[in-house]
Structures are given as structure tokens and as C-alpha cells.
Amino acid sequence: MLSAQRPFFYRRLASPLHATGAGVGALWALSLTLATLAIFQPLVLLSLMVAVLGAGAMAGVGGQLRRTLRTAAIVAVPIVAVNVLVSREGLTVFARLGDLGPFGQGDLTLEALVYGAVIALKVSLLMLVTTLASLTIDPDELLGGLRRLSFRSALTASLATRMMPLLAADAGRLAEARRTRPDGGQQGARARVALVGAVVGGSLDRAMDVAATLELRGFAAARPTAGRMMWLRRLVTPARARASIRTRSRHDIAFSLSAVCVLALSLLVRVSAIAPFQAYPLVHAPVGWGTLALCVALLVAVLAPFCDRRGIEP
Amino acid sequence: MAGIRRLAGRRRPSRGPLALSLLALVTAGLAGCGLGAGTPPSGVELTVSEGFGARVLRSYSAPKVTGQETVMRLLMRNASVRTRYGGGFVESVDNVSGGEAHGEPVDWFYYVNGVQAPKGAAETYVHPGDRIWWDRHDWSQAESVPAVVGSFPEPFLNGIAGKRLPVRVECATQSSAPCATVATRLREAGVTAGVSGIEPGAEPLTLRIFVGPWSALKSGQAARAIAQGPEASGVYARFAPEGSLTVLDARGQSARVLGSGAGLIAATASHEEGEAPTWLITGTDEQGVELAARALTRASLADRFAVALAPGAGVVPAPAGE
Image (cartoon, rainbow over all chains, first blue to last red; front, side, top):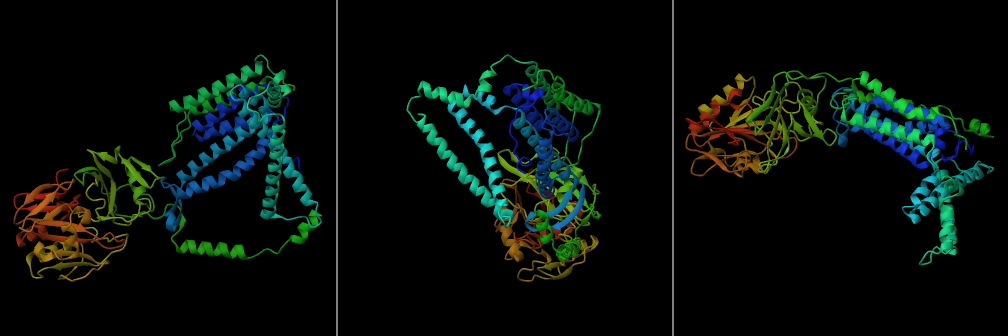
């Protein structure tokens, strides 16, 4: 039960994306995010979604991405519904709900439905990319990079990221304990609120413990001491990250090139009419050879770095 | 254990949701809901202009109509439109946008059968025979022009919001020539109207046309609004006590002064929702009233907010000078 509901956290797996440096991985994920924001053509967005799901499968996190997709579907439905009810810019009415009082006339249009679906698709893609990034990019290594810019911010972020799995485990344990009661424990929304309250209370206790530990280590002193700084460095930059000061691997180069290609294709979409899309006042989304070529190019650009499976072991 | 709980918790299927669904379907049917675009209204006309009708950008006697249109959808289907606020407000038509022109605020306004609609264009349905008129104009002097004459014979022929209203011609002198001329002009336009003397008080659900010299009408509610200026009535013309008619421009400045024998056809309404507009066919004297009565034709009034007339001057639009 616990493992089935386990939140999404980084775990080093044998995949090219896991073998890539955190900075390069983050850049790659950022390029996918920017592409999602730049593209509106539904077919191209769908091809990008297929590419992201494929990347997740090849990185060994396909199951988690499928779960995220189910969650995204729950989010997508209200997005589409609200846009259909609110937007008045479409011309093709498919249903009339009459006068909705303060909300005006309730003419539902195909254009509002399509645009709502496109926005829902983009939101789903953003959720997938974020999930993929959180599952495949080592947060410690990423924060190690941040340490050079702002040590205390890195410390705070590092503590926060380490707290998340602990709180998730707390929630799981509390829920399990409640289920073991003879009467099965409370059910429904009240039970969830009680669980959240307990977890929040526990998090405050942990925060007090961490603050006391930091104070004992001399963090509250006016000037940092060499010993304290070493301790903080060890906390923020774990052994794996310290050991990973290395030259660029073939995977780093491959994912960097992939990110550049994805960004270039996104830019191409913005500046050219290669994948035109207009939702209002009438849906206009012609699919030509250029659009199809763009879909294939995006698939290749995102998935190509996963073909090289050498040197991916943890 | 979970299985036992599930069995113990199993309930008989309730008929409540089914009954509620049926009730919702019946209510939806009664409220005019349905699938598809609905029945298109016939005989609709669409005009797009700027400067109080001075320059007509588009005019359709049979615009493209698909299903039960709103005023906004009708415009978007027949012109290139940019909107704001989720399609509720027109920003530009054919790249002619609202905002500011020559330091004065300008925006797009619309009239259905010569009446400024109380709701947004995306909320107003088009009814059979409606004349839809979009105009971009300076609203520095009058934020609202509640009624215009440029859609004649509307609103007398097809009414307001799909509802025909009784029409009454109220004359200062029932036996006068202008009174008979107005009745004839309405009859020629297919409008059935009653004729009476001037009745005191307001009748919000009757389309009233007051006919008579300004001196006889000036105590009425509509005439008092016109005397207060464009801000109160939306009419850019003013009668002077010495017997002249001043036509104002869009900035509220005097543009033309017409002497004796001048007439005016104007419409106004109170700003209360659902109140029918009132028309005035008046003049500085009997000669001016007769001149105005004769000008009660579609050709003379087309795409004008109000018109002034004078011997030798022809038809002068009000506001003038745009």
C-alpha cells in the first residue's frame, strides 16, 4: 500500500538520463518546458507528449509518468469545462444552455472546447516534464551547483528537499496506523484533514529539531567558522555529488544537443508558419508536411539521447 | 475484512439521481436549451461604421448567419474582429480599434434596432428582422447614446429584443399636417401606429413619437433630456429660446446654427433597462416640424444618430462635422 502511493522522488536508475549531470538534465527539462509553452498546434503537442512519455519509459520511470498522466486528466477536465463555459470568442455553437444569469448566455462553442483542450494538454505536458525531471535529476547535485551562488539558500533548499520524503513517509505511517484500528478508522474528507493536521504538526516538530541542531553546530554565530562551514558543505554537497566533479560524459553531450535541438525547433514554430494554430473565432489548424516533419523531428530530438546505453549503470 | 466492509456498506441503488437528471432535462428543454447552433434568424441587417455613422465600413443586407447568433458572433462572422475579456468586448473591427483618437476617447458601441442594448454583445441574441449597427465614436460628451434614428423603420417594425411594442404618434395638434405626414410615413414603412394627443406621464412599454414644435414639446421628459445636452440624452442638438436649432459636433461644440424653419428628428431614452425609446419630430416652428415629418424615411435617416433639417440646408447629421 505504501509503495503504491509512494511520492515521486529521485532514485538513481540505470538510464542515460540518470547518468547525465544534473545541470544538463535540468537544461534538457527546461527546453521541454519552453517547447511546451511555445507550441500550440495540438498535433505537435501530442507528439511532444509521446516523446516525453517515451523518455520516461526509457529512463525507467514510465509507471510514475502514467500515474501523473492520470492525475493530469483530473486537472484537464475542469480546465476544458471552465473554458467552454466562459469563453465567448468561438463561432461554432454545439450546445445551448440558455441564459445562465450572471454568467450570461450559455452557448458552448467548438472553438472554446478545442482551445480548452489545448491548454489542458499543455498543463498535462508541464506536469509530465516536471515529474520526469524530479524523478531523473539528482537534487543534491543540482543544489551543489546552487551552493556556489548562495550557500544559505542551498542549505535551505537542501533541508526542504530532504524533508519531503520524511513527511511523505510520516503520512504513510499515520494512514497505515489509522487503518489498523478495530473500526477501520475515520473515512473521507475529515480523515484526510486529520491526517494532514498530524503531518503538519510533525513537520513543525522536525523543524524545531533541525533548528536546534543547526544552533548547536554554531550556525547562529555572527561569523562562520571553518568547522561549521565544512559541516554545512558536507550536508549540502553529499559524497556522491562531491565525487561527481567530473568531465562531461557522452550523455551530457547528447542531452545538451537534444536540448539545443528542442529549443531550436520551438523557436522555429514561433517565428515561422510551420505549425500554425488558431482557435478563435474559427479553429484553424492545418496539418501539412512541415507540421508532420516537425513532429518527427521533436520525437527524434527528445528520444535520440536514450539510444546510447553505454555507461549508464549507477 | 475490507471485503466484508464493502458488502456491509452496499446500498440499494437510489432513484434520486435519475429523477434529478430527468428534471434537469425537462428544465433545460423549457429554458430554450438544445444541441446544435439553433435556428438562424431571418431578415437581419448589419452595419459597421465610425464617427457616428459618418463613414460606413461594412454594410450587409444579408450577413452570414449560422444558427442562433449573438450580436458578437454575428459581427465576428462577418468582419475581422479582435476582442478582449474572453470575447465580451470589441477591441477592433477591420483593424479600426477603440482607445483614443485626436486626444478623445473612442470605442465601439452597438445598437439593435436603434436602441443601445443594456447587455454585452456576447449576451445579446439576434432576433428575426433585427438591424444591428456597430459604430466607433467619440464618447467624451456622451458616455451613452441610448437611442438613434438611423435604423428606421426600427424599432417600430420588429420591436426590441424580439418583442414588438405598441407604437403611438402623439401630436401637439392632432389635425396638423405634420401629424398626418408622420402617420403616413409609418404606414408606408409597414408600421401600424395609433395617433393621439400628447399624453402626460411615462409609458415604458410603448414606442412613442412626439410630433410638434419645440415650444409645445419642451416640457416633456424626453425634450427636457435633449435640452440638457448630449450627456443626458445622447442627442447632439439644442434648441435656443430665440427659435434657432444648434447642431453640435462630437466634442459638444456648436457646429451649425439653423434659423427658423429648422426641424429635428431625434431619439432618446431613459437609462433604465427595458424602457422603450422616445422619438421626437420637432422644429423651431410648424414649418420645421413639417420638414422633419417629411424626412421620416429610411433614405433620410439611414446610419444617422439624429438629423436636423433646414430649408436649403438639406439633411444635417447630428453630431455634425465627423
